[in-house]
Length: 294
Image (cartoon, rainbow, N blue to C red; front, top):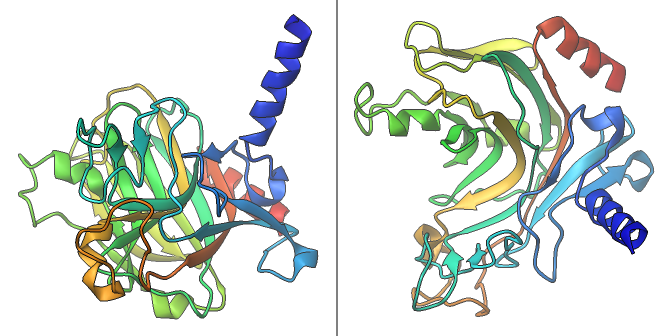
């Protein structure tokens, strides 16, 4: 009996963890939420498929309108809980809502504060920006605190939304948070764009920083608070994460009284590809991982 349970555990673990070889990443990944009936949280595409890859493989993320994910640990949570509902609802007996995703995340890991991450994004020519709904493509999270950084498509511009500053209104009044614009989405279409982020995660204004590189060129930097520093670990997220769906209802021909399982109007499917997602404490190590994956 114990042997059967062990086999079942291994099957579930392997199915829900992205082992993509060192060709894509040096981290373990799993779906952020279990997907609906139409789509997957992610796919691994290969060079022979004809789809975009840098080496031999890449992650493919497909966000199908309202094919929403749900949580196995919190059975009440689903992205389609109710479009206006962001917490648990007694009325609907579910929670979540106002978001969609095709997304993966790493387990939590301990870090002393300073580290490097890289990721490459391929935006297809037919990708549609869905503003005023925002679309995150990469995130740095602090366990039991929240998102510290979201790299988001906001109105057609990939923006470094330093989300931790929303929780520090004592230092940065609402609406005055420094969010650097990194690149236009139109300048990313039909090709790979390579990102590196050098950061020190700190709750000290004089110690925290972000440096953003695109195609090996320093594009923007920020000095100040980057973390709540709860010391409970960090984790990363990658893929498509759409928030504020309700803001876009009229734009895409959806009813303002939209309920789960209704038609999604003309809301577009979004697709992106990601590769070279690496984490390292030092830039030298990061560059070695990137060069080895080519």
